[in-house]
Length: 211
Image 1 (cartoon, helix red, strand yellow):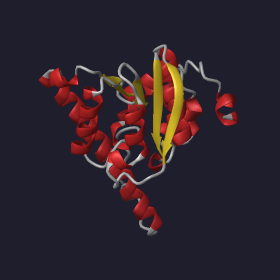
Image 2 (tube, helix red, strand yellow):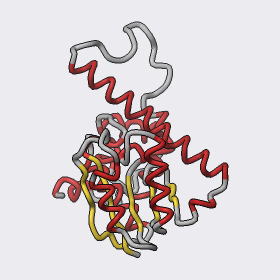
Image 3 (cartoon, helix red, strand yellow):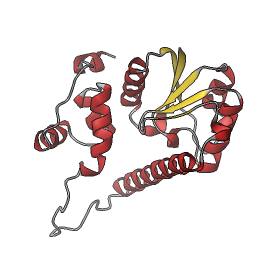
């Protein structure tokens, strides 16, 4: 089955996103024809960016794989508009981060599935806005994180536990997983040991560096 990958440069980790997309395509038996890297701002309407051109290029029955919904557009309404066009063209859209796929029956999608999808999209946007806000504070020299004296009540990576398990199942290297969850590799290694989780490492970390 022919498919296309799509990454957005604003994610800050295009190499990790591309690796995740390749691993996802391989796991599902897709033939990855091309990975389109979009450097245009998401403030520009999706139809005027490379993702719009990619959607026009894709034919009925083909697949577009993106890491997460927030890479497609700047609002939930625009993403749903894009998915509606994909449904009309009978193009499948996959979200690696959430292991979700919206197929060409999206017009008849059940209410609960649609609500779940919207919830994931909103979560992506909240995460994106938080990351951007932290970047602005860092650039302005303002303090980050909780004030001194407050205990770290939960481990940093606990909130990513479900995502990390999915990455491990896809065979993504530990070094790339660390980039995807924005932590130092050793932090991830310690967290995996603490939770008795084993990295499958079907993707060689040296291969990641070479690519």
